Image (cartoon, rainbow, N blue to C red):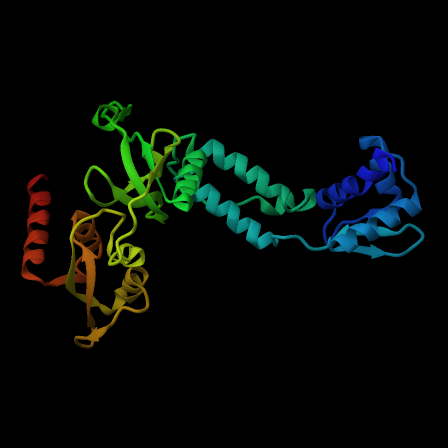
Length: 325
């Protein structure tokens, strides 16, 4: 068998994948013409029919409509159009993925639908004004962290922040952070790596888009996760990955904010009735200015009932904000 005969079914699969779908087909003659003109592979009616049957046996969902000129089309794909639209919206909306990388990924996603469906994947989501990451190594950084997690190894990296001139400056004069990564987490529009910090001897997190370059995967074994540390519990109590002491807090909430409480704490949160217009919850949260800002955002519809010290800390934060006006 010559090379053309070996390659012909592969090119037929490519042509059907790119140029047909449930609404568009190609005839035997059209397939033969494309093979000849674009790939230099001669074919006739019977060889194309035989190759199509081979691809069907392989598992491709190719439909054959018999007529004087048989017609063929690929009628199912790994992703439905609605799923591809959702993937495109997620990529375009992500602040973690750079604009350039987003455009590249969307272009690749569109090819999964075939050329006739590309127009349907034109999205109308309002994401153009969204601030995007400028870290062009984003996927390489995530890949290295994920590799280290699977291998249970430590990583080393440099971390940066912006100065008032909007320049990137390495933290602590370029010091390398040694970190045992446990989990990659998407939280509050950003990607974080959660793990154990050698320097602080404690659980902590870093924003992935602020890691300056692909981390080095060290030969040293990662510090094991403590038996009493639950990653899911940590995420449920932490606001925007701002690590701080966790405490139980009692909140008095207006009935109108029930959706927001469930969005934040999940459907397992226990709800206690107060009166006809309010309810009470006791939740375990990381106490920080991020938590206080979340409370303030409800405009008085969520109030801290206790502990008293947390109420006092919240009042002091609000007072400081007022005094700066």
